Image (cartoon, rainbow, N blue to C red; front, side):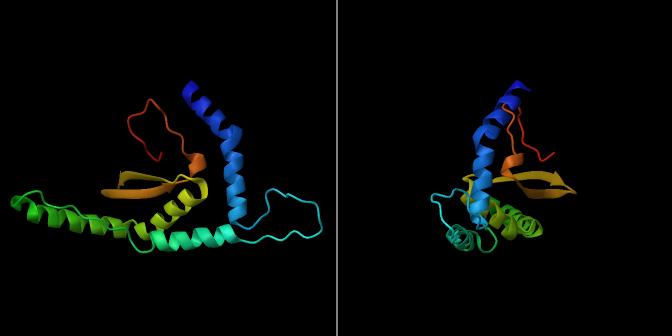
Length: 143
């Protein structure tokens, strides 16, 4: 508990306010006013830049395949690759990948979790502010 409390205190003393400011800027809100005046223009450049990068980096479904290391594995790899494609499609990885990349661009870190659910892998995004690593744990779960 002491390690968790220290980690939470570390995040709460600076990162959370920074993350809130990053999100406000992304949504087009002024965070720090550097001058006194009557006009308060906000140019949503960060939103445009981030969404352009998300579209370029994370458009479509992520795709990768396993390769056989010898002739005897060819059929095994085909079955495994078809299962992988099905699981990626079933998890809507195109959308989850976009959320993941957006978090990385906004906050510098994006976190995906994976667990076995209903007989197949389930992949999900974990909001950065809800993610704490227990240094004594041996596995990360979404529970």
